[in-house]
Image 1 (tube, one colour):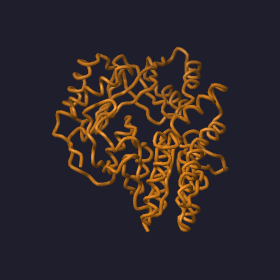
Image 2 (cartoon, helix red, strand yellow):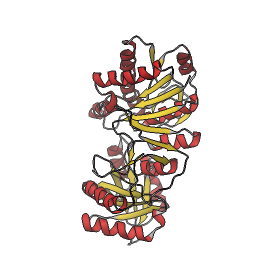
Image 3 (cartoon, helix red, strand yellow):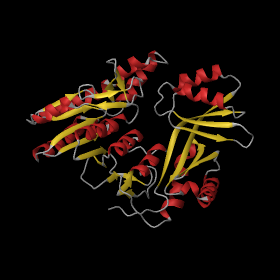
Image 4 (cartoon, helix red, strand yellow):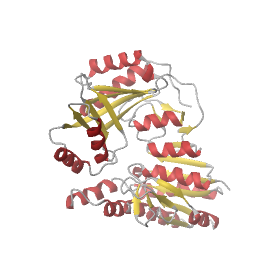
Length: 398
């Protein structure tokens, strides 16, 4: 018997009809003789709604209570999906992250999975049940409920697939794979049939939203092949694995919004370190300015309390740093682009001619990232995609 792990995102379980559709897909796998484990996110915009409720009562809600609140969204969707399956006469059981054996660190709102002990999951599979796990959550060493940050259900699915030595790990969403840019933003975006873990990590780190960065890192560490595919049809999607492939220099364009820029008049390492520690941020860029100052770019993706943090930063470092909002980034990702002076020249000229909003540029070996005004990101992404992807040999989808 093959064990198949599938994850369904919030838009895929947002209504009764969509829950029934997911149930039918899982039932088909079960009828084919497979062991089926599915991980679900909260329905639709439930998490955002719960967060708004909390912040309406407390502009800096305590992490423990916020985790307890936010984790309820996934418990609702997992319970409803199990009910939809059982309505078709097939046994199913809904489990919380803790019941499924997801053990995490003790950091609320952005915990890391430390260990997976899926004893209960194996027991339920052994008696023929479809197992529906609430994603995005786990339990810390002191027994507290924790959440894994935005995109955490992807990591739940990959972690369970690794622990169960599953034959397949499918991340199902309303997009049928990984594209060279957000297809809702770029009409000419190309589906990529396969990617190496490193390529997917770079895309995810710089804003590609189909797969969570931590999920890709976990898959790479444990050798789990991810199949990113549609939740509504059986198209091939994109395989993410350790297999290298021949590729064009630039594989895609990604973007991030809701960045905070901390501007330091002088490059003070101690001040910079203290500011970043207050933010508790993971995605951080540093850039020394022409005048000897330092710009720090911080993603607020997993910082629901970022408005409170900004107020605290202003209070603590009054006069020593300046906060700028409405900042975003656009990045080109591909083998060696960060080492190519030609790519930097073309990138700068493309953005200057289309948006006139380039603020600064960062690079790694395989990425070049430009900081821009958030409002010009869609135009910037389209311009870079035309210049760096569409003018290259086509990356035909398999």
